[in-house]
Image 1 (cartoon, rainbow, N blue to C red):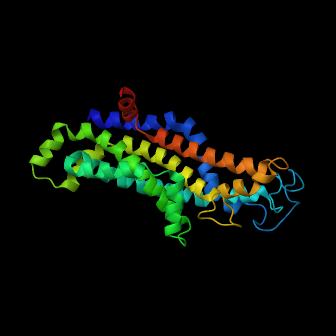
Image 2 (spheres, helix red, strand yellow):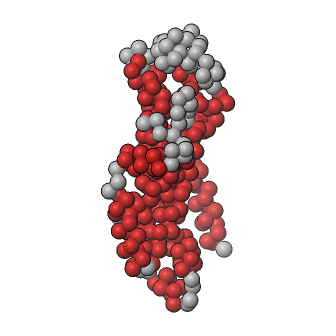
Image 3 (cartoon, one colour):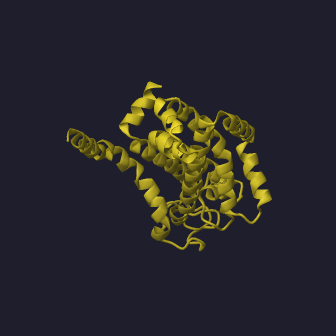
Length: 281
């Protein structure tokens, strides 16, 4: 009877402990998702002079074609966050399975780790360009595939290292001796004890996915003009940074704020026991 009371108390303390961090982490992703509906001006219609300074109905001035920077800034983050979230989810899921299998089956693990080591040698920019050239009509799907391919090797190594102590514990050996199948060992015996690790990994892989997707946008791989995309806005408006710096600085700052916010959100939701375990290492 006492244990349920303790659990309810711990769950009740979590919102109060996490509220300050959540209040900082949630607004940026929420604004990025809702931004296209909040844009005050049409995205592709000039409303001011090219590289006009803030004012005259354009709080952040105009871009290289005189379009409202604020409207394009509000509309340019939704695809970035959705692509990065999906890529981070796929990387975390793949790494969770492959990393745990590597720890449970050392012979298979050596093959997986060698393949991961080979992919780690591929530079991010080169990987994005290779996948984009191999899939010229892929658009954002090709960029997301590049983020998954480039992010999975590091995540597999991370999960395999975290799963090794769990696999070596007695309860996994007992379950294996009892005839449990591999999928049961992976999902129930190992991954159920790595929830905090996987949540922290998701935050890290989201930041890495934002980096890959933004790099692709800057290289004009994926979104193409006149799309409202933060990385594309930085590329297009860098030549006029001395005339209206907000046209290039605002989307760059938005990319950084989005990555930090989602990483902070994931770190905030990590259970306190998981944080203690990480800190002890």
